[in-house]
Length: 286
Image 1: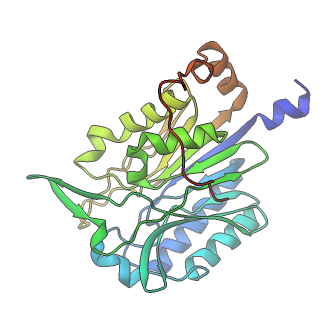
Image 2 (image 1 turned 180 degrees about the horizontal axis):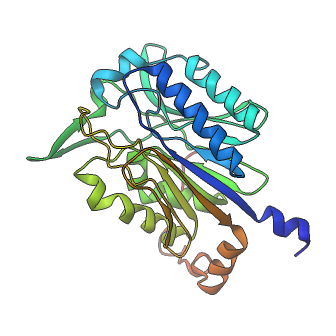
């Protein structure tokens, strides 16, 4: 491997665990400051949390919804360009054609929007005595798979509940993704039970890096996020993890290590495609 190739096989990822308030301007300002902080630590890819510009909840989506482009995506574009990073803009409530979506916009180092992922799987659950939530009361689902290329690797994007669906991660892996990112706001019921478990499962199943960005926990909020933003390596090890508070965590992504794991345990070559398969019905956008 040449020296240049070795350099390109490693890059720093930053995950911003943002304290989200009811004041959109404050959320945008704080997110911008933390992206600057992350870039100052050498990060090349920065990930923001789900609903980083607004409180999370069906009663908030319509009030905070924006067109894209709009106020929040303008900030993301400027922050990506100012800091020369790939900025995965968590998600915002998006209004388009009279419908609302939970949407992640991704911007390149030139400030250009390179991807728009709308949450595919809506969070409709009922755990008796603990939590009942129905995103479909206000949101519509997206209908596209979403990946984007960087000089380092290809990245697959999902939002929160999308992470529970192993098939999506498998399709992304088969399309060449080596990093999967999930802005997400698990809660105080699903968070301690499944948040880390799902990330480690997606990482081991597909031999990829997995990163999640949660809002920081606010005990006074109507929906209390679990926090604990995390990065997992292809061996299934947690290599970086936040607590509940606002912070930025970092992980050095080593694609040579990923290749080594895939060579040592060659599950891709060992799949029995004659017996089973997971396929997509469309090409990923990006």
